[in-house]
Image 1: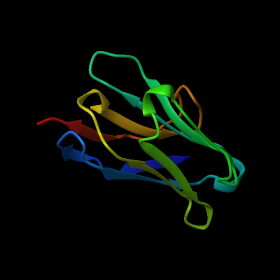
Image 2: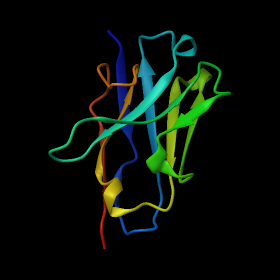
Image 3: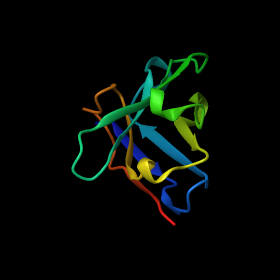
Image 4: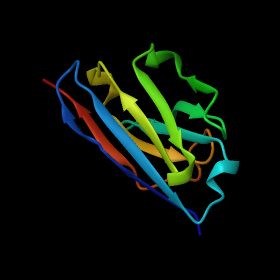
Amino acid sequence: EVQLVESGGGSVQPGGSLNLSCVASDIAFGGHWMYWVRQAPGKAIEWVSQVDEGGRNAYYADFVKGRFRIIRDNPRKTVHLRLNNLEPEDTAMYYCALDRRGTSRGQGTQVTVSS
C-alpha cells in the first residue's frame, strides 16, 4: 500500500516561509508525477503544483504567483514544496498526492498564516 507522509507545516506571519516535505513508500517513486494540493476549511481541495517524474518540468496554480517551488529527490523518494511570501489566504491543510485532484494523498500538514 502506497504511503505518503507530509511534514513541515506550521504557523507563520504573513510574508513568512515554510518548507514542506513528503516521503513516499511502497511506490516506484521515479515513475510518477508528484502533486501538492491543499484544502482550506470549508472549501474543496485545490491543486497547487506538480512535477514530472524527472523533476525537470514543474507547474503551478495561478495563485502561487512565483512564491512556491516544487522540488523532488528521487533517490530519497521525497518531494518538497517551498512556500515563500505566505499570505493568510494560503492557510490550509497541504497534501502531497499521486494525482491532481488529491484522490490518493497523505494525511497532510497544516499551514497557518496569520498576524
